[in-house]
Amino acid sequence: MAYAALSSLMYTLEQLFKPNQSFVCRSSTQQHVESLHQNLSALQDFLDDTTKDIETLKVVEKRIRNVVHKAEDRVDSSLRNIILADREDKRQKACTSFYEELLKVDEQVYILKKQVMLIEFSMHGSKSAELATTSSSPERSKIEENTIVGMQDDLNTILDRVTSQIGELTVIPIFGMGGIGKTTLARKVYDDSSIRSRFDKHAWVTISQEYNKRQMLLEVVSSITGSNQEVSDDELMEIVYRGLKGRRFLFVIDDIWSTEAWDQMQRIFPNDDNKSRILLTTRLKYVADYVNCPDFPPHSMSFLSQDDSWNLFTEKLFKKDPCPPLLVEMGKHIVEQCQGLPLSIIVVAGLL
Image 1: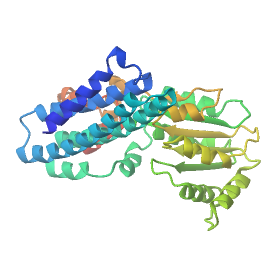
Image 2: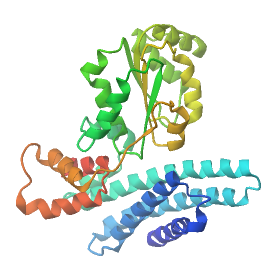
Image 3: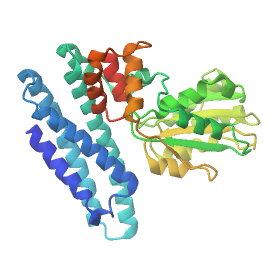
Image 4: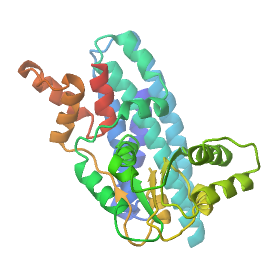
C-alpha cells in the first residue's frame, strides 16, 4: 500500500512536468515539484530493497503510507482549486495556495526521507529508529552549527550587502528549501565580530510557521532592552521602535513564512538612513520577493556540489583526519544520496 501511494503521488507530479502544465509550474514551483518527486523516488527505492528487516520494513511502510496519503490529498485539493478557478484573480490565489501547500508537503516528505536514511545507514537499527522520530526544528538548529563548507560565495555576497554604503534601511532576504543552510549563513554573518562592531543594536528572532506576534515582540524587546514588560502589543511595538530609533541596528528575522507576518513586523523598524540592515530567511520565494529592496535581489541558496558535499561529510565525520581509503567508495555513495542538502549530510555524518 505504501508503494502504491508513492506511485500515485509521483504520477500526479509527473503530469506537472509536461509543457502544457506551465500554468501551475512557474520556475520556483517547478523546483519544489522536482525536489518532492526526487524524495518520493528515494522512498520508493528504499521499499524496493528486499534485504530490509521485515519488522523494520513494516514500521517504515506504515509511516510512509500515512504521510504520502495526506500529502496527496493536499496536492490534489490545491490543483483542483486551480482548475476550477473561473477568474484570473482566483486562479492566481489558487496558484499561490498550491505553492504554499507544495512547500509544506515537500518539507514533510523530506523529514520522512531523513528518517528512512537514518534507519538505512545506521548500524544500530533501534537507536536509529528512535533518533528518526525526533522533531526536525529544534534538531535542525542544533545540527546546522556554524559550518559554511561550500558557502563561501554565499557568505561573501551577504557580507557585501550588509557592509554596502547604501544609507537607507535595507532588507536582505535569503531563501531556499529547508535544511539548505539559510540559518547557518545568517548566523555566520550575525556572529562575525567585525560585522557586529558596525552596529549599535543587534537582535535575532525566529518566526517559524506558527507566527506569534506577541512572542516575537517580547523576544525583540528582551534583546534590545534586556527586560520583559507586560504591556499591550502596541506598547511593545512602541518600545522596540524607540529602542531602535536613531541607532544603527542589525536585525535577523529567521524562518518567516508569510507576507502578513512581515507587514506586522516592519512597522517596528525606523528608517533613519544610517545603514541599518535586516537579514531575513525564508523558504518561500514569493515572501523573499515581497520584502526585497530594489538595490539587491533575493539571495537564493543552492545545493552543495559533490566535492563540497564530500568535504562537509568528511569534516563532520573525521574532523581533521582524511577518510580511510577503504571507506571512500561507500562514503561517496552515502553522500550522493543526500543530494547536496547540508542538513542531510550533517545528520548522517553525525549518526555514523
